[in-house]
Every structure is written in structure tokens, then in C-alpha cells.
Image (cartoon, rainbow, N blue to C red; front, side):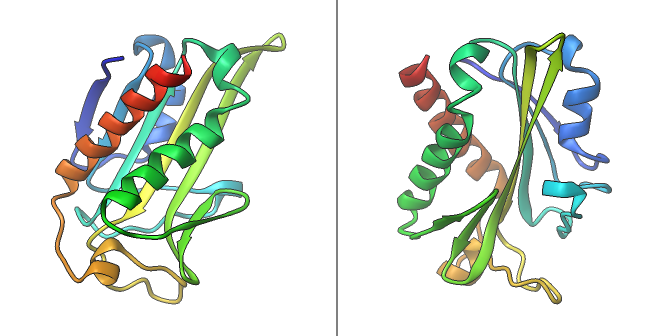
Length: 173
């Protein structure tokens, strides 16, 4: 499965763009950005992120929804845990949508579905992964840089995650 990738320097929200314009995009469209002015998580919590330091992207799913709707969270976790394993990071999942390393959040996931007349039309998955950010204010958070003491190329990490997604989807679908 080959994705359509759209990148922005700045956008209000990658998920909102995909939700609002889903009809204009093909299945497996990925929107990424260096900065979100209205990034959010579960229950409309704010997702704060420094410009260019983190991996911020959303994925639109429009095909195979009968298979994906009950498995999407597990697929996402499988992808992200596989990704972290390549860096020897041992994460854990914390309901409803967070990935932690030790007692600090390293990644957030937001899954949003659209229904029309009880028919699932699409799924938008937003992912925020702390990569190079060093300070999180009062939040109990961490980043790959804090964990591994290395800087990372965020674009390369996006490519890695997308590749893993493609492999995982080919297995499931």
C-alpha cells in the first residue's frame, strides 16, 4: 500500500485537515507538519510541541474499514512498538491513547471515526511523537532525544514509521 504524503511547515491540525477534506484525499493519505497551532489529543486536550522538534502526523483510512474499525488501535500500537524497538526503547501503552517510557509520555494517539447513517466512512489517526524536544513544562513527558541522548532527523523517522505502517497494513488487509 503506497501512501500519499502531504507535508506542511505549519498547520492548525493535521487531523482536522484530513477530517474536513477527506473526500478530496485517497485512502492512506498522510499529512505531516513541523508545527500545529491547534494540535489536540483525546477529549480536546491540547497537544503542545516545539516547532520542528517532533513527529506530528495524521493518516486517513477510507478502505477496508470493516477490517480496520475493530483493529486500528492494535495496528497502530504494533507499528509504534515495532518502531521503538528499532531504537531499543521499551515503551508501554497507557489507556486510552498514550505511550509511555518509564513514567513519562513519549507519544499520543488520537483515533477519530466518521459515520453516516451508521456506516463507517473513514478513520483518521493522529500521532504525536516526542523526538528532539528537551523541555515539556509541567507535563510528565520525555522524548527520544532525552532517552537516547541523540538528535534525530524527524523526516527520516516519519519515513520509517510509514514503511512500518505499510508492512503492517499489508499483513492485516
